[in-house]
Image (cartoon, rainbow, N blue to C red):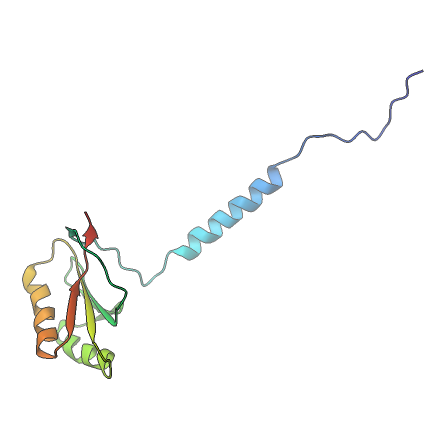
Amino acid sequence: MKLKGRNKISPEFSMSSMTDIVFLLLVFFMLTSNAPNALDLLLPKAKGKSTNTQNVSVTIDKDLKYFVNNEQINKEYIEIELKKALEGQEKPTIILRAEENVAIKEAVNVMDIANRNSYKVILAVRPK
């Protein structure tokens, strides 16, 4: 006589709840990863090594908007903002991020301000 049990455990595992959790985590990280203050720039290419000493960053985008530490400012107030930001620094350094198609005179303007105030300027580039 053969007896069959009523409560037979199935060896299969349902992945639908795991898939839901992974999908929700994916959506969460996609929404939170986009920083509203991040600037999307296409920097010029060059061979070089970047340094970790960054006191202030100056960014010039293709529309000739100027940003000091991701805060948009008027072109006339760059020197004042840089003096405020670098006040009391031992070795004041500026990271200059100028988009690829920005005229060189715009970058030279920032470099001239740095030269007048004895700031070191590092030009940010994309690796080749």
